[in-house]
Length: 419
Image (cartoon, rainbow, N blue to C red; front, side, top):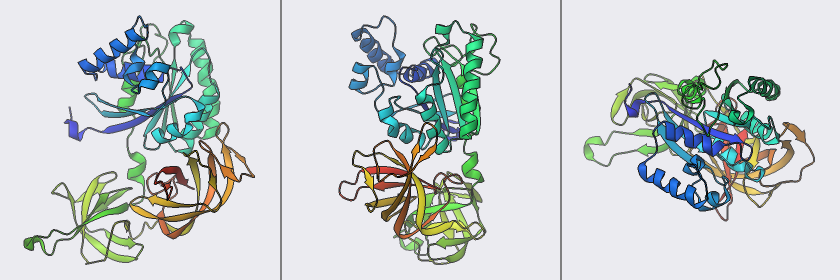
């Protein structure tokens, strides 16, 4: 068994319609994997009794806000952490209500996979399509369709297969990459951590076993080499007077000692002479490792610059088109000015054009929009005060994404995916 620090980390999000059982599923994962502390269990038992529940309410393990517990719904994104002997996990439990679409985008933006729950009694509904569309827009590589509440349909193989066919049509239209189907009962634990004896016809793996084996980080490692500089390391001690290194997190691909690199936006070139990770010298480092890189030449480099390989240059432009998910109650309008944060860079941008909104149920274009309201997804054209160094979001989710920030309040008002 690998040490805890060396274990792979899988980030996944849950999505689905209201009352599909997202919080209960996560509670079951945490409970059956023994990732709950005694005081947490006691607090949930008390809350369950207060709400008049005869049974232990697993959903309360993730519905952390008092308002969520009182209303029996998930309002905000709840992050939970647990580990098995094979892998570490970060779960983002997102709301099912349509008015919290922005929360689903927030939870999915850093995820490696999505679990989309479907109530076996209801089949594919509008929110299933909506959340699947968002997963498609965010380029999530793995989708797990958990068909829940199988205990309420007598564990019917026919119903499971019917939903599987229906969702297959949705997945084909959206171009989802890898889709897995699992029939479960989150309340009772069937096919969640252990295989269900009540569904012997299902020959696939239970959910946790599948999550332990999903690929992690393959897309970022296969991308072109990208190293946004966060900090320049210049020790003040005399014995280190010649030392200079550039710290940051690799956003794509890999870097090796001896690589010929270009620094953007200056265009200066050099060669990597050393790579350090927590004081340990490396010959090669991969995304998403955080490292310090030393160069052969003394170049003027500062936060916001990007180190790339000479033969893997990104796009450079002060005008980009992007899909933006609007997160604020004040609408986005043409001519609006915002602070743009892209990798480690911060600059000013102006919305030059709202090209169309996206119908998140079908991914169809809705032209003629003059405003973008909260929870809307739209394609816009943005002009920045300085050129951006970027890749398309489909190629690199880090260098292909940005956030828009209100100049007056410093609120994050929009999340963008460069296309």
